[in-house]
Structure formats: C-alpha cells, structure tokens
Image 1 (cartoon, rainbow, N blue to C red):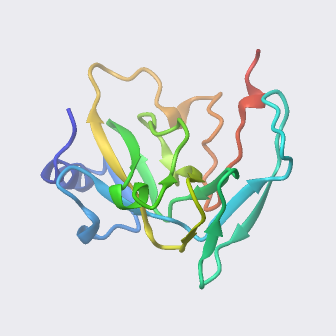
Image 2: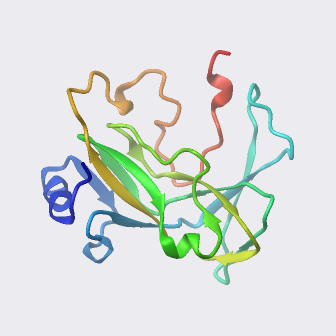
Length: 178
C-alpha cells in the first residue's frame, strides 16, 4: 500500500519520515516532490568497469542552467535530505520531467527502510535539454512494510551509501565480491 498525503503528514509528525528542507506545497496526493540539487557529476572514464572504483568529477549547475547531452550518464542529487524509518521509499520521475526526455534513475528507484541521506540520481536524456538547480525532478512514494525489519539500512555494517552527502555518489559496485 502507498501512503496517502494525510498518512505522509502523520509519519512526518511521528518522525518516521524526515524531509529537509520540507515545504507543505510539495506534498501531492500520495507523494512528495523532490528537487534537483546544485551538484552534478560525470565519470572520468568513458568505459566503466564494474570491478574497479570508477571515479567521478563533480561540478555545479550554473545559474543559467546546464545542457544535458544524450549518451552521457550524469549523477545528480536531490536537494532534500530524507530519512525513512518505517516505510520503503521509492523515487520516481515526475511526468513533466519524463516529457522532457529526462530519466532520473537507471535502476535504483527503491530505497531501504532506514535510508537516511540525499538521493543520488542516475540521469540520462533522450535529446539535449537544459536543467536547473532547484527544479522539480522527482517524487517520493512511501510503501508500507509487511513484517518486522531485522536490520535497518542505516545500521548495516556493509551498507555502501550511508555517508551523508550533498553531492552525487559514484557506484560502489567494486566493493561487492564477485
């Protein structure tokens, strides 16, 4: 089940959902709109290797915006820091974002119970498109968890994305054993 606007507000009051900064006007019927932070990143190497640490270069989106190019993977970040202590958060693109040909995540739309951070976005585009820091970029949807959680994400010793950040974070696939 997806939480309604009233339930999201109740969970914010209880502290089981934290959104910062929070503004009531971004609460939808069953989601909360998140915005593009000012930092983007691209990988230094054109060919990525799942077994190695692929380094990224960070840069800020200028006031006049930044033109995304097809064929390049951009890592972005939400302005909003979130904590989800009792629900499964999903990040989806807004229809207005999709209608500009922008995808905000390749595969990583689901968070874990206990995720406490900004969201790194895996941004790609169908054609060149100018984007701006602060623009609405996606929406968080919260699902009810069935059963008791044994280990929350923020308590896992092997969680790869626990460090609080305001910048996008590169893939940590290289830390996995395979």
